[in-house]
Image (cartoon, rainbow, N blue to C red; front, top):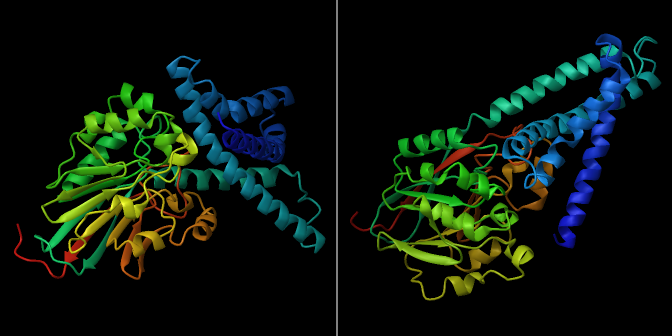
Length: 387
């Protein structure tokens, strides 16, 4: 494990432990006064819940699969509880402190009053429940774009799905539903721009998830490129091979021509240098030798540096990665990190569509956005006779 990962996980677990400790303090009045839970039992419950996710992740190669899966799944849900519990009770504490200073509260409503913990806990359950429900009910988002180039088609119906994160949290049941919904859209072309497999590549193989991808149907095939999570797995080659077993054409710094008139380009993920020490191809090199009088469609997992595909005369780029923050208010961070963290953007010649993704990473909940399947109707305004 390299230094950057040690620092990342060190900071992550420090923040996780601090938030867990704060939340346990704020919920203690409820458990002690109303539920009559002894302190020693509450301490054990707090410790076990707080350690469930890191233990599930760190010991997954040493524990029996059902144990590590149970710990990881429970811990993933608990991360959502910690995140929103911390934000909620911190906000309540600030509001109650201001109200107390301004003498708007009666003496009975003190910081450690169990009624505050009870109402906060109830509100936390409502937020958490909605987030879990929302994460399991993806919507279909539609875009119409025009490309002023000639090809053998008048229009192309693309279905694009990013950030599936197939693995422990997104299993065969969710994949089967995804495949059914994609096929019902009758796509001409299916694009999967990265993070198709979560970092648990072994789970993808053990559960034979490639079989679900083999059921996808489209006129011109299914194409994918890698994302950072295929590299986090430390085995991107196996991830790509498993997808190929499911009939997915994985393009890693590769270009292919479909319908004898449209280029589909798959860039390797930006994180490849961090995990392998090798750089991905420069886009100009990747596009070298192609005929730019034909439409050029680019898959690049992370929507960074959009000026590069614009200057390279790419017509349409599809990306994911951002999750649009996945959990409010993290969307304020992603909106600052990326020129566009969700939706459609025209940048001179380039048109870009960024999906907030189908699956989830970490807490399996979404608040402030919806998981989605994206359909893109591309109109070729100079099209010749359709094939």
